[in-house]
Structures are given as C-alpha cells and as structure tokens.
Image: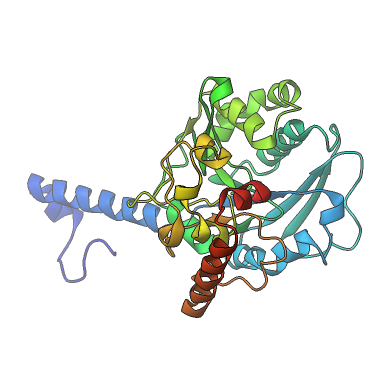
Length: 325
C-alpha cells in the first residue's frame, strides 16, 4: 500500500513537530517496506539432475520443458539440466530459451553422491544471486506457483533445507530430504556449505544423492526444516499423486521402508495432498503432460474405484510401495 495515504496532509515538517506522529510515520514506512518484501517473488535457481540418455526432447528433459518448466519461464526464471559423468549432453536441446544444459566431469554414474554434490557446487558458482535453489530429479513434477507462494513465507537468509524429511538411523538419526520429491536450499544455507561441497562429494561419493547431500548439510550446520502444513500434510511428495491416495497404513504392519525412514507421522490417503500446499510429486515420468492440479473430481473417483478393485484382488499395499521405491 502507498505511504502516506492520499489526503493525509503529510509532510516531514509537520511530523517532526509531533514526536508521536513521527513515530507513527516511521512505523508505517517500515510496515510498508516489509509488506513489499513479503509480496516480492523470490529469485529461484531451479535445476534438474539427469543423465544424457534421458535428456532428449522425447524423453524426461523434454517432458519437464513442456510442463512445469514452462511455468518457471513464465516467472522469468530458468531451469538448468545437469549431468555428471563421462558422456556429454546429447545434441539438439541447447537452443531452447530459458533452459540450461550443463555437463560436468569428475564422476561416473555409479558415484551418485558425488554427482549430486558436484552439481550443487556448480549451481552455487553460477547462480550467486539466487534467494533459493531448488533441485529435482528428471521425473519430479513441481507445482511452481504453490512453491513460490510457500517460499514467500520463509527467509532465504536463514541456513535451511526444505523437503520431504527422512531420518537415517544408521547414521545417528541424521535428517535428510527425499531427492526424488525435490528439495530446496536457502541462499544462506548454500553459502554456509559451499566450501565443503567438494570434500563432501569425495567422502560421500558412493552414497545415494539425497543421503550424501543430507550429510553435507548437517556437517555444515544447516537446519533441515519440518515443512508440513498446518494440518500435518506433507508438501513435498516422494511418490506420484495416485500412489499417495492409495496408501493404507493398516496393511504396512510397521515393516515398510517409507514408514521407517519418515521423520514425521504419515498422513496419506485421500487427505494426503492439499491443492494449495503441495509443491511436488515424484515418479512422474510419462505422466507430466497429462497431469492437472488440482485433479478433476472424475479423476479422483476413477482412482478410488481402481484402488478398491486392487485391494479386493491383492489386499497388499506394501508391495506397491516397494515396487515404487
């Protein structure tokens, strides 16, 4: 809102003659500036970890470019596709405006942890002015508008990581965020970890990418936040939407990796995923172009019907989750 309001007869001279009015003016200006800051869209550096065989127009990179990547471009932001290994990017994609195609040497496909952390190092070096850095896999689908609205509520000057929080008990209950669901690092967080990324990549080169990154964030002093909404629902989803709808904790028997590794109580089924607070889904390859959010009521009815039928046939939900992993 404009300050001072129209018709208020404002002048610095008149305000200075009245200390209480001067204080009111100062508080009003501060409030207006803070409000503008909260409303301003954060500057985000988006990136996708991929490999050459998937980064073609007809495969995963092309699917991202044609769907949520277009939403990123509408916000005047860009998406970098990053591969690490002996093979470079395939030809034919490098001229698409708004997308970057980056190939890094120094790792093989077997060194997944090194691959992820070297990509983070590149992002820090080439996007120093971003408020937030968002990483996804090439089968991650981001709900871009929801993500940007969520980030407006947070401070990029705090060293934090946002995502679907897991805990690794074999590493002293170390927190980390699901790589497939996508996760976010603040400007302050990546700055804090920047000097350790190369060392982290070498030490954790054989770990899963998200575990390697989580170890580096923890060692560097970043806080892995609880990102659930006010009703306890996750924002970052490590499966596709229909899988979350179909989850039934009654059949897990306490012996499911998803339940064991989750840092928070699970909140699944038909109340799993709010239309305004959800920011991502995983395992979306081949589904992105047809995906609509929020889903139409008839789509929900079809999923529910299919789920009831499959339960009558198998009665086992855990096998679905294990296949998805």
